[in-house]
Image 1 (cartoon, rainbow, N blue to C red):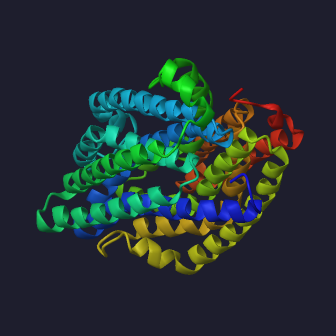
Image 2 (tube, rainbow, N blue to C red; image 1 turned 60 degrees about the horizontal axis):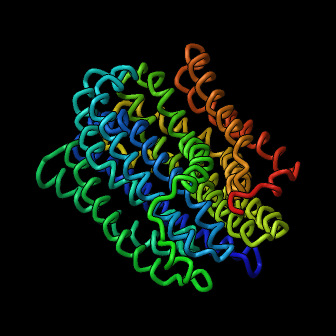
Length: 450
């Protein structure tokens, strides 16, 4: 990504990431569609009540991987392959350990969390069952996403795409079999997800080992042989965490916002929750191109900063903003034309008018604002890719604070619509703060590797 036309390099690199992330969303969305159509509204609401929390963990895994991969990408740009390999193994060891800790916390606290979110009593038991199974598979989730980020850092966005296609199709097939064939209900879709994630993680690890064996240490070879290549480097982990923590926040901001306003939605009952769940899944799909462009911009920036090509980063940023505009227009048109049919795909026909009304109102509003999250994502991508994390961390916290405050304060007056009206307000504030930092040019003096 350090040679050729920046716009073309970004587009070619981002497209497999977009397709891969779309498959990941379809992977997650399959649970809702299948239980909504074949089990019923309460089952859809149960998965929806769990969705905000599970998505936080998905985004933490993606964010942790992407943040750590910035260091890996900079080593690749600098052609320092010995440190590259150490960065990969350090990230894998750390995030595997973290995933076990988070899984244990989740298993112990799932019931209390759902009650704190005011989950309707008629779906509480099924929601907890779904969460408990999901937490058992959390190490697989973390490992797959960190491994995918490492492939992306090395300029390979196709391998994660192929693996996501495989796991998505496997997940959907198992969902249908477990729910319609074995009548396992909500538990069935959770088990299917864990199996698909587990196989993808194992295959990814084997492929990554093969890829790393192709990097030769060159002039560093003799020093590496004498010194021994490290599997874990605490100092390197510190540099990774510096970028990974803000990136985890940035990647999960939408999901954390959903989680913190979940109690607002739950207070309107299971029918509104079902409609909100359906629309929320569609929103998650619509932001995929924007988040993928941001992640591509991060890798593009990291490799070019490692190669000391700061002006190429600026050229890439302008190209990324143009791509955001194209995707935003396409998404808006699709949602406005097909929102009723899209919501109907989640609902089996026996649901209340409230479920349909909530879902279509959500999509009708949010359709006009996806350019904001795209501009936010690519601007954050530049700052993250060079290790300039303080300002964009603050920007994402402002985004979160606005979403939570507006949803909670305005829901008594605007109804459930306050939840989605708050979303573009947060996106806009986040983008403006990050853009001011980008325009200052101070990010170009940052370095994660010396």
